[in-house]
Length: 298
Image (cartoon, rainbow, N blue to C red):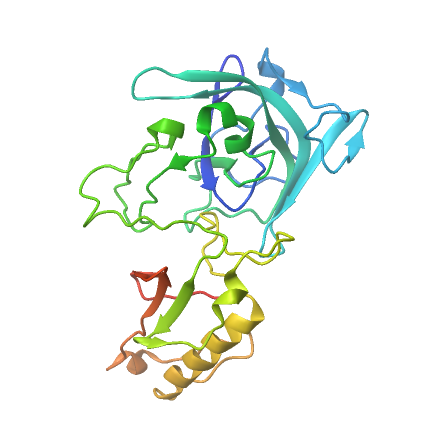
């Protein structure tokens, strides 16, 4: 992703669960380690700060007529805040790069407890977030005339040390290709999505209506590419918790105080242990959740 003129090149984490696109500022007060310099607005000829009257300045938190932004992430302790900014974004392409002027994004000056991967440190190359949610500030919405609120992207395994390169495609280019029978499963994201959860081939007694979108836009179920854990409403979580506790008790593993589903075990406990399978079924199509058999629920 390139921002500004001349372009500042940054790698951003694609996040379908948030609307704000932001990048760490070069002069940040609270920073995470980054292998290269953060975004320096003074070097861009096309940069300007969003005024308080800008339609995307919601809520209107302003200072010196500049709109400020803040994002607090679902874990409750990671956050970013700074100046709501406007600049040209250039998307590299396999054919010819395409530039879009006047896109709104955040320039992060206070980035608390931001950790993108297990490899965070001086070698971290991720400078911020590419917000791909459904809100007005997301890149999808700002470029709606081009994206048609549609995109496709392959999410590679984090365990692939060699790296995986994929294309982010928008609008009419967002087509699924290849052997779709064996390589790709398509799941319609519907307001009345019928999501069933199985554990070890047993259907858990969870009322599917807890996942369905209400008329007042509450409830619902979203895929969040920026989160490593699955977050569920209590009515669903408690059922899964009870089933998993029963499963671990068969190995004499008991929950620790720090979490419902964290158990203590010795190396000897690994003998004969078979990790349980948790499978999500979307409209009758089963999808095993995590191939490493490590499940994180909250």
